[in-house]
Structures are given as C-alpha cells and as structure tokens.
Length: 95
Length: 111
Image (cartoon, rainbow over all chains, first blue to last red; front, top):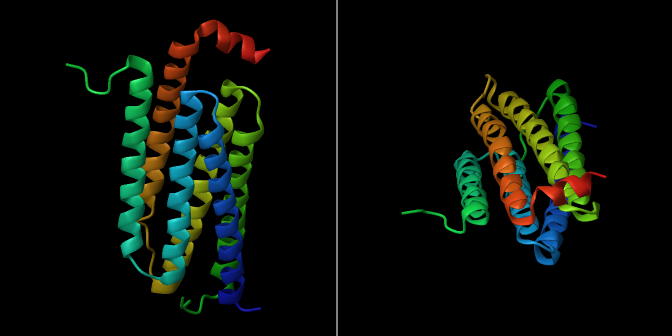
C-alpha cells in the first residue's frame, strides 16, 4: 500500500466522521429544548464544517481553501459570540 | 481529485492523526446529542472540537509539507485562532445559560 493510497482512505474516513458529527449537531440544533442548546449546536456545526473543508483542501492541493477556513473560523466565532451576547443581555449592540 | 505521491513516512502519521481527529469530533458531537442536561452537553463538543481541530490541522501541515518539500506552517494560524476563541465562546454561552436558567439549575444538574 502506497502512502497516497493510505492517506486517501484516511481522508475518506475522516470526512465521513465529520459529516456524521455535523448531522449530530444539526439534530441538536433542530431538537434543542432551549436557546442555549441551539447556540452550542451551531458552534459545534461550524467547527466541523471548517474541518470538512480543510480535508477537501488537503485532497485537492489548492491553497484557496485555507482562506475560506480562516473566514469560517472568524465569522463562526463572531456569530456565536453575538448570539451568546444576545442570550445574556437581550441585545447585541447596546446603545 | 488528484493526490501527489506522498512518502510513507509522512502518510502514516498524517493518516493516524486524521483518523484520531475525525473520531474525536464525532465523539464530541455524539455527546452533544446523547447527554442529558445542558451543562453536561456543554463540555463534550468543546473538548472534541478543540482536540479534533488540533489533530486534523497537524495532519494537514504534515501533508502540505510533504507535498511542497519544505515546511508549511500557515495552518498554525487557524490552530492559534481556534485555541484562543474556543474557551471564550464556551464561557460566553455558559454565562448566557446561567443568566437564563439561574445558578440553582446549574447546581442541580451537577448532581
């Protein structure tokens, strides 16, 4: 078994795992009994999506995926921060 | 998708790290679905996501370095960002939850 072949199957396995993890997070996002459960599920969802995109980027040997991952990490953090600020204060941007 | 030829010395550790990262992320997400109360659900995805991200990004660095032939370290940026922001967002979410449900609910769910 060559190195590329081994890496190919490992990347497939990891992508399947990450998609299942995203499905679990989506289940919690839809079913979550309270609002904070949904914020937590969204947080887990964007991290798993970013990792899926990262593995796509490794496999296609393109450098443009890296910028997308950085942007997803940045906006995901800002989004979950704004949502939890909303939970905490009832307003995102206070006067 | 095309994959360039990677030597076995890079492919074996990268594959092990990838599989570990995928399994850790899956474990964190399964904990998010299966655990009973919110305060139990809080730490399983945080731990799984941080460790899974670390493992997958390390594997990505190994493979990119093997393909290009020189050390590629720009994935460190994402790792650094995730390590810095994951505790902040977790703490903010838990503060929001405590504000909404009260401190007594947090104490009760620990028992």
